[in-house]
Amino acid sequence: MRKEGTESPFLLPMKDALQIAELVENQIKGSDIFLVDVKVTSGKITVLADKPSGITIKECITLNRYLTGELEVDGMLETHELEVSSPGMDQPFKVMGQYMRGLGRQVRVSTKEGVQHEGTLLSAGPEGIDLLMKSTSKINNKKATTEQQLHFPFETIKETKLILTF
Image 1 (cartoon, rainbow, N blue to C red):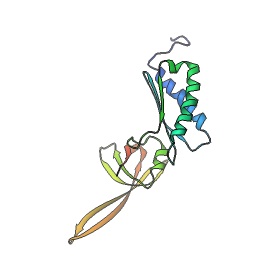
Image 2 (cartoon, one colour; image 1 turned 135 degrees about the horizontal axis):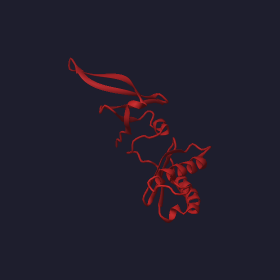
Image 3 (tube, rainbow, N blue to C red; image 1 turned 135 degrees about the vertical axis):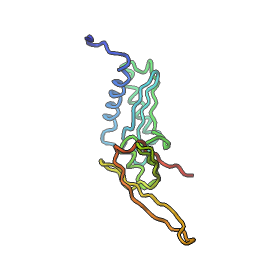
């Protein structure tokens, strides 16, 4: 039986991440900013946030200053560095806000069965996402393009990423 106030050090990062996520959610309430992830590792706290039009550096700085003030009281910043940023375009989607931000853009969906699909993200909702896939073939020496719309329930998706084109 564990005494009150004595917690396993292995449980602290998860507990801290949940507490930090709650602080972030309270701070961004009423704005269009959404929390993507909070990671607490030995020596570092990473907060990833975004918004439909893309989070600005100024908004990240504001959130960083708020969290610094809150976390200094708990002494967490004596042992951890704090980083607040956007998740980066090369990172997999984790929350609905990222899917909504990706509407109309090219994505790669990897299913849990190991199959990859590329296409335009048409919609995203509680049940999953819809992808418009185009394929080109030659019929009688003429190029023919066909379109197919596929639905992917979230429970079948391993990962979704933007396809970066330059």
